[in-house]
Length: 48
Image (cartoon, rainbow, N blue to C red):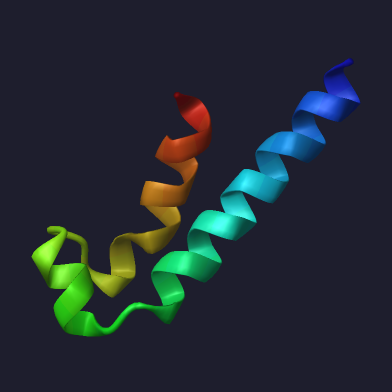
């Protein structure tokens, strides 16, 4: 169960990074996110 949860969290983390990474700087700025914040936002997404 723990491995499955870890795998799910990793996939969600990677998906978030990929989606935000494809956005333009302007789109990110509209969301209040800087490029340097993408990893933090992705971590927060899996933390709940």
